[in-house]
Image: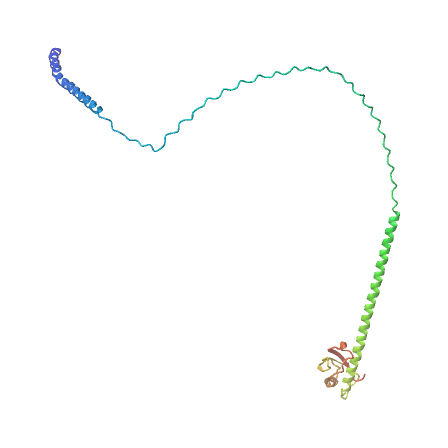
Length: 251
């Protein structure tokens, strides 16, 4: 029943579907025909002219290749001449002279040792001479030193004598001006330090050691000041600025 119902239905549907398919086929053919017509008309147009300007010169033509000249044929090699070998001729060598026996060198005589006794004696003589010269030099120096000492001693002695003489003169003048006080017992000694100028003027008189008698000490002090200027030495080189003078009532 289903097949009987489906048969006429399917056949009717197939007949109804042919119309759109035919219409579609016709439309496709029309579109293709139009496209062919337009394509032919588009290709029948004249092509546009395009002008091209060359800014660089064309590349140079390649150099022509000249054909190489034909090479000369190689010269035939010269064949070496055949070598004629000379027969060997034995040459007799002259006999070598026999070496002469070497003469033995005679040993040189040993020279005798020099006698150094003479040199030693000369050296001793030189040393002895030097010792003698040194001894003589020492002796001369000793004599010279002794002379210097003697001269210095003589000068010192002369100076001491000159100063002693000068001091005696000063003491004599001062003693002449001493007024002895009464009642002095014994012989007391007073020591004074007297300071003076080269002209003999007394600058100061200090009592260094008292005699134990005040009156006598004061009397000597007054006498020293009263004796200014004091006597001058015989030579200016004997002058002494400070003198130590001793005084006793009885000299």
